[in-house]
Length: 230
Image (cartoon, rainbow, N blue to C red; front, side, top):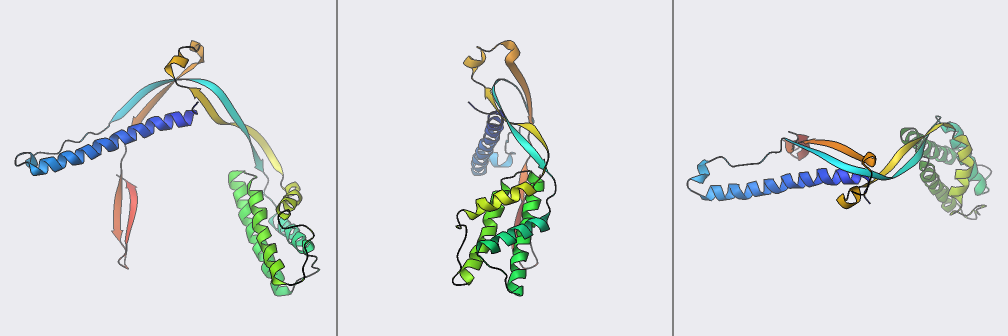
């Protein structure tokens, strides 16, 4: 049972492969022309797709939705301080030397800024888990830098502990449901079983547009290749 994007993508991909097969055949013809005393003076025939228009019948079988939340900008400094204090408390450290403290706080703050940017750009809360695991790596460095330290919370449990503490600081502005996947019926025998009002006709128009490699030599002699539109 394909999704709509998989089905339409496979159609477009098949047309692209057809064009590639045509170009491979053109190369073979060009080689044959080059060998022939008369044909070598002729232009090489090459097929080009102008427009491909299709009407594709599908029927919806299943619609899956997902909820997307938009978040308020987080207080990066506040979250950084919360995380710093939790790491220190977990190692039963009352204080750190000034240079070490500033270094640790700077690393945490940079990670927090990255997390804030990812959250605002994608509205994906799963980045919080990634952030907590990255922060724990700082705790590992502290733990290994001094002898005799003991953890209150084991290292494998610390990311989840941080998540629970940070989560209340992340405020949701709004939530909305969006379509995640549309599963469609495309087999002809199954489409015949559907009521006419349940069938959707998709008009698809594909126009060819080529890409070509552009090679440029830099001042140091190296060659840079870029794929650009024709």
